[in-house]
Image 1 (spheres, one colour):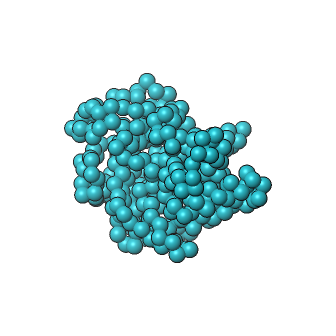
Image 2 (spheres, one colour):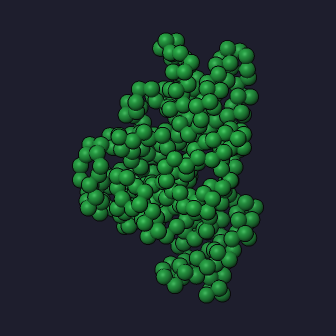
Image 3 (tube, one colour):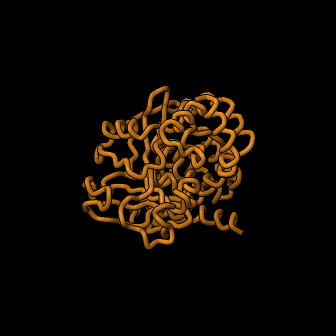
Length: 357
């Protein structure tokens, strides 16, 4: 098994390197492969025995873990988007009628829902100081980027998981839709924290008939079908503060990053996920700076295609990301969440236009 898996690894390494995102290319991936070589070979061997399609096997299908990286430019871009989102609230004419506690509560819920309230208060004051000429904008953005770095839990490990194991977790921990649709699965990811799986995400190509007239075909569309997590998990960050673990948000963020590689025979061009209107949606709002945006609302109905066995649990907001994603409709969000989301998304689009130029 090892010899054939080793042969396969050498054959597909060039294609793996070609599809890596820039932040993982070169030494980062080489070090990852050295550290996990035995596990990669074991998974390649299992793939050979069960599938026999190794030549078309992307690296993330057999990665024991998904390589972590700290992209400084990406962190600063996200920090700038957060800064602009807070500034959008501070420049709102109606802001003056709010007291300090109310404004902190709104910014916490709308811009940085995964942060602690005290940090949201300090963020708001820092941006206000910039607009008042008391602080330098670049310094505050660097501080926000540092906070984002500090918020990355070194004990939270993202890795691939067998779909059956992911569905077992969903059955126990998903309140609304405990059943899985196993057809078309492209990604089954898990977040492991302190040795325990605390969240999973399943994503695949749509199996119904909808969307076939789109410029992004079903083969290039990645639909997040389930995200389930253990609620209420908290940890101490590097400053000794008790903060949420954020496992579900980390999984959705990783799926956004993996979209370009996730098409079946074509580049991934659109990611879709759904938020029940009865849910807070904080994990999605937290990713607007990465290009995720609300695009449409659908009422309660029976799903089509292979999902028809599962009654969807109430009205939903559809969120999309990627080059073929629809335009945002900010009216789908609660009024207090709109200014910050719009400002964060505008910052994302400005960066996207600069990179495309």
